[in-house]
Image (cartoon, rainbow, N blue to C red; front, top):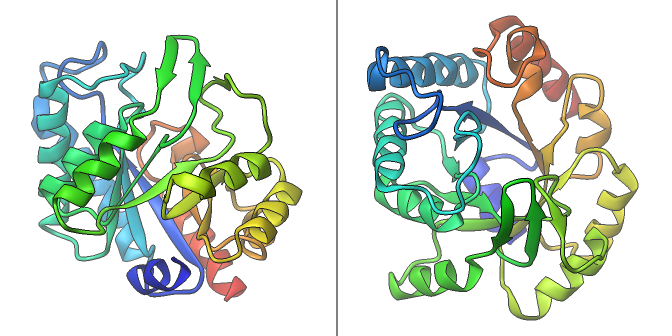
Length: 262
């Protein structure tokens, strides 16, 4: 899969920048006065700054919809799709979808909007503060096959920080197990353990390996020595806070470091 993903991103090393939606309709913090116009305006503004500074890809995600539901309601799917469609009407780079924590909803939004990849949990069972998450991997694999396409690509979150897996194993053991019968297209892994990245890469050298969380200006260079790309969010926001607007200066500085790594 390294070749197809590299072709999609247009680079051997790539930056996937998160475009966070403001709270969507139906979620507790949805701004009814601002409505969808406010959500779309923020997403367009953030995406423009990121694209103007040369990121290879967007990842649309609903981090602000906490506490997260395991099955996204219809109004959320519709609103998320509308945001993606509005933003991508003004952009041409590849993009993905990450719905917390409903991978089937992400698949539906991706298919409806033309997204190239989704990120989520395609294997395992996780205990979280909100309850037990059972993955929907088998369902989305069948849906994709029935559509007669290999898109969107599926990025599985190894060692996800969202909860505690019921099967206790490290990322290498998880990757080995998944490779036997769950043909995901790539992996993400938190930035906190660079040595684990090396071990996973040795275990699955042909599988795209992307930093899922924790990338910043200080560790980007070290991470890109091992990984194929990184999803980046918090460090590009005003004051380094996850749900703040994208900060142009932080993006410029980050992409300058990125270009020096090539």
